Length: 251
Length: 347
Image (cartoon, rainbow over all chains, first blue to last red; front, side, top):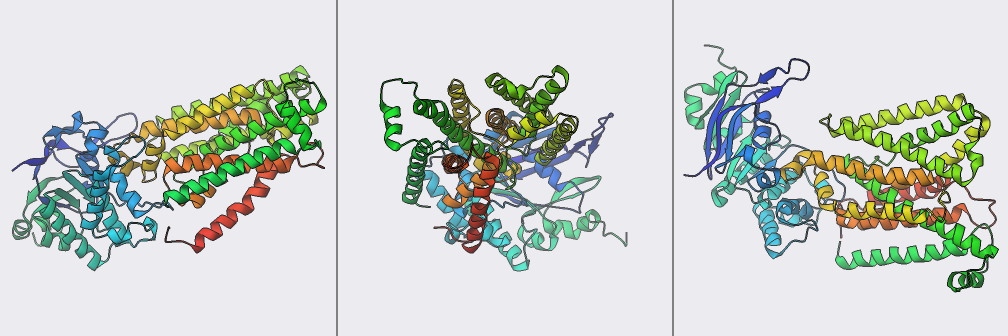
């Protein structure tokens, strides 16, 4: 199996502002591995550092220490442009631009591959169409993005990530604004994508209930505890989930 | 939008600009017959008749200032609205025009109080002095903003810093005004009203070249600007160095604003309104279309205002700032109301 994402002795957190430049590490050093085509869910209580870990992997925040490898390349050695072809990320950020159509938004996924004048060739257009089909939004192509529902918007952003054609896709709380059927729908879609395209998917979610049923591997984080990895089944049986969510009342 | 519709709107804008340019040369506070205008424009004899003087030294320079100021302010406004993802951003939001005003206020009021001379009575030397003072004020604010942009992490912090600079410069200007003589205040108020006739024929080539360079440069930023619309994090994930682009965009918008404000005064409204009109006209968020669209729309708005400001029968010319808002505001309101009606689908 090919290693897609490797975290070695990784410390994430912040350098505090002010005179002392104190370093605030959120967790003990992280040791973890994701193979190609795997779908991993990252969960844990608020403040565990899930978003910080995502930002660090996406190269938007420096690691305090340790090493991140994406598709065998050290993150530190990659510039933004090289990284944009290896890793795409779907955030919870709102995009509210008035005249942005669904097609144009999905097309931004091709920006790392096209020149200054944004001229797309047939292959680029093909990838955009296929990405929209995979996400099931091809019928919205000429609609304005802001006129869609939250669930539809989420799928458009997934299509954008697919168009970016990266082996690794990160989803930061992909189900945050969705109702129950849409959440279920979304997870099934992600699972199907990882199976059909062999893309590696790392998603963060609070929704334990939902992810336990749909992912191969679960990563748990909690303040001051080491990141732990395992199958959902193991995690339930050995009470790791209870421990990480602070639910171990009975000892 | 189909390419066909795109081309036809651009053709209409081009036609509008040509017609308005002709109207701007033909009409003015002094009535010159059309035949005479054509004779002055196309004859080889460099006669120093009154008509020739009015056309070559006043109407054409004024026309060119209107064209390039309109285009420059529109693009500066578009750049800042995209950067801050805020539809209310305009060239005055970063305090650059307030800095220019402060520069002019310092020159007018301090020279009036200490040297006892009236800059405003010095003719073209006075005008050049005012332009230089405005430029100095604008550039000072721009440098401060650039320094600040490397120290703040969030674009919103930068926006707040810019607005604070505007207040600061405004209040210092207000204090200077409070302690100044009536004559100096009048000169300052007149500068603040904006004018397209403040650039002499000799300085026109510099003004036109400087603005053209800025406009051409902005087109090269189209792709980056499209990415900025998605927000900083998505832009970065698609390979854009957002810190660098933020500085380049502020520098470019500031450059355009500084030069135009130095020569034409703090012209309001064009920079705020034109990008909205352009977006609604072309129903796109693609800057490769929006930048030329803003340039064209900005030119049209500036030329219409210039025409109205000096219609025959009006003594002298009306302050441009009064005219831009008077014409532009109802138009933008109409555009917004229409946008509300046809919300979700684009052709």
